[in-house]
Image (cartoon, rainbow, N blue to C red; front, side, top):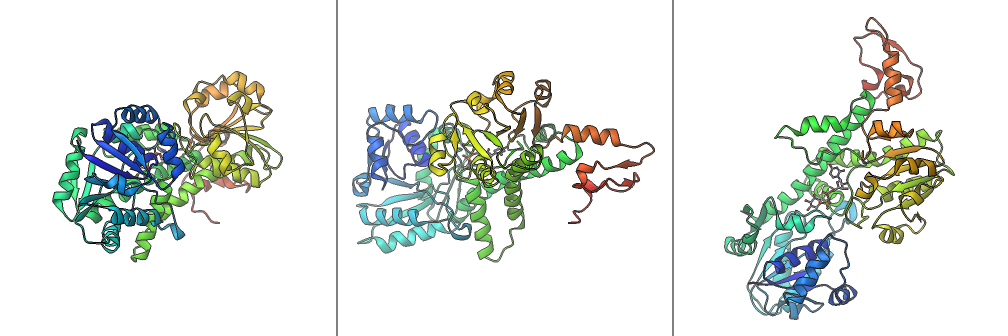
Length: 479
Ligand code: UDX
């Protein structure tokens, strides 16, 4: 049994600390937000993370979990202290480390014996040395300590499962003994443990998140091409995924990534590269494609509504950046809602969990009671978050409530044939526009001659081309 202090009670700190308590350790949470600590002391969990509430209550009852705003109290008999505070995007995308600095200074001022300080927060490469320097300079008198980087790889909505079943534990430190002690803490997870230096451990985290974001932007780029060529991106992803070198995960085309990690981490990595004279062109493309993935929704709705969103009523299905969380940070839905409102649309939204957090962010949003209430008299529905409760919705009842049967599916949640059968005008990501595809098929001329459908030529008149030339849709964008 070890004594662990955790600075920061967000979804990473709370999930990780509670799991360590569940393994039999004594864990004391520290947060500078007194209201958060007060709620936790009353057994209220300030974040929505499936299963976390029950786990906290059980371990608090067993006396393994404690909550305080007092660092001295939390560190009194701790051997380890995890820094799990937020590192939001700052100027130019650089990670804002003010909360890491505050935690490091508080640890230095309140430690009464040697400690192992563990950076769990996602921090720029080199932050471990920066934290050590802050602690050295802030200690009233010298006291031994080590800094270990132990990046988190947990996803919101499945943080408990991901922590208890890691693909790997990454540890970085200048002192291998300190890293070994932190490795011992993780032994019950029976996972592969990689021990390396501080900077490499910090880079593994950024590179991992940036790669996952790249995979998502890659499939969204393929989706955009599939849309022009009438291929089905979901089937493409399935065909790709059987290749063990590619794998099936993170190939879901849609409105792209949001959340508190990918957007911030890709930007932070770009910033790190730039300030050190590197040219992160791939990371920039990943961010550009992700931005365009959201714009696709607005463009498609505008196209289906006679080119004008002004005074149109749009229902948004899902506000959280992904299912099973109430987190709306960098959520595509929130971005798209604002873009629609900026064009004069009346936006109404429904999300099973995230409406309160969404209203705090955009009080002009109208909220519906449920999916059917949302559908009432809308000109179109837009799927932004693939919540389970949307998947088996009564489509006939939905269509009956709508003013127009237009559904734009930003998460490819529904089946094209089923939606067509119910009489919806349905658009998904990377499925090609059936009517345009049929038009394309019907205009394919004999003897290798064909004209690219006018809609592929952005309104220009269709041109006769022979079979040898690339269709307009594939030619370099002349614009
Ligand atoms: C991510 C990483 O997965 C996790 O390892 C890291 O520790 C924190 O950041 P998280 O942001 O919580 O976790 O959620 P994740 O499930 O990775 O989804 C991120 C975003 O990508 C969501 O907006 C999701 O909708 C989107 N996504 C995910 C896609 O658009 N397509 C996919 O195939 C997968």
